[in-house]
Length: 112
Image (cartoon, rainbow, N blue to C red; front, top):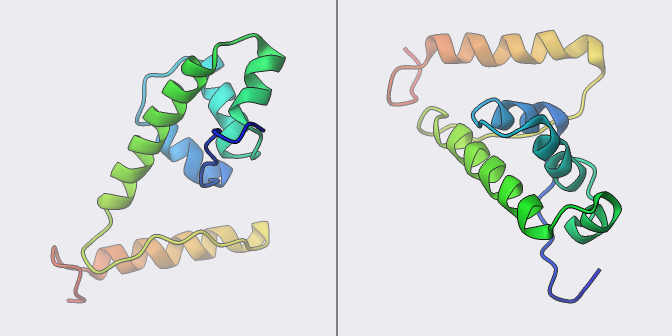
């Protein structure tokens, strides 16, 4: 890694995919950004390996990070976005908790 290379906050694959769904990136650019944002590889290493200019990779990263920020901004007021690791069989339960909470929240983020 060069001293000027930026390290990005890593995203889980699920969070990454939700952000990607808000973009119109090509599948190839999505995979390049995934290597950096999900797996934690450096953009320069991905660039050297794939022969894709770093600017292209950084452009994809920028668009996905902007989409991720927009996703976080859409959470009801007073809510906090978190990433948790749970056994796969608990994922539906955790998502259900979120959906029930969203259903009982008014536009100001307070319970009904």
